[in-house]
Length: 186
Image (cartoon, rainbow, N blue to C red; front, side, top):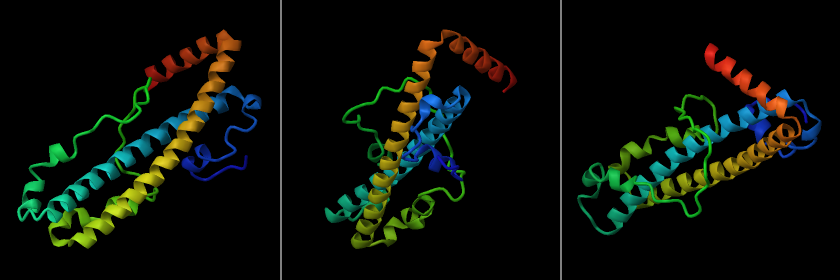
C-alpha cells in the first residue's frame, strides 16, 4: 500500500486490510488507533451536520405551515428540534468516544459547517432553505459513507489484533504494560 498523506486517506483506503497478517503488530496497532481517531472525528462532524440539518428542516416545516413566528420561536424550541431519536439499529460501542472540536483546518466538509446561512435563517426564503437542507443532507450522506468505510477498517484491524492476541497471550500483557506506561507519562 503506497503511503498516503492524510490519516483519513490511509484508514479509508480500499487496500488497507490487504496483507494485514504479514504486517508487524505495532503497525496494526497504530493503524487501529488512527482508525479510531478518524471514526471519532467523522462521528463528531456528522453530528454537527445533522444538528444543522434538523434546525433547517424545522424552519422549513414551520414556514411551509404558515407560522409567522416560526423564526423567533425556533431558538426556544431548539432542545426539541435537536433531541436525539434512538437510532434504527444501535451499534454497541465498547469504547470511550472522545469528543473533538472542529479544529482541523482543511478537513472535508469544512465549507458546509462554515456556511453562515444557519445564522441567517430569517433572511432565507423557503427555496433557499430547501437548497441548504439538500446540501446538508448530501454532506451527511458522504460523511456517513466515509465513516462506514472507516468502521469496516477498524473492525478488520481490531479483528486482526484479537486473532494475534489469541495466538500469543503474552502480546496482550505487553500491550497492557505499554498502555499503562503511556498513561503514566501522559
